[in-house]
Length: 76
Image (cartoon, rainbow, N blue to C red; front, top):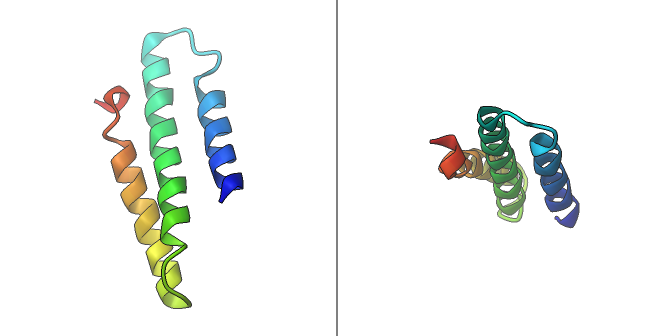
């Protein structure tokens, strides 16, 4: 679980580095929020159930996390 969080944080930092245009920064922050939300949601969903139920919970968690990531101020 720690590896996923570290990778999400690195992806977000990488996505926002080097963007000088404010619009590009907002888009990168939004993308980072969506990707980070999906990663965290998938990791949390993976902790539930077993077998096929675990796969479904992981997919639902990733989708819900991505949807939550779109609620960042940068995405509006």
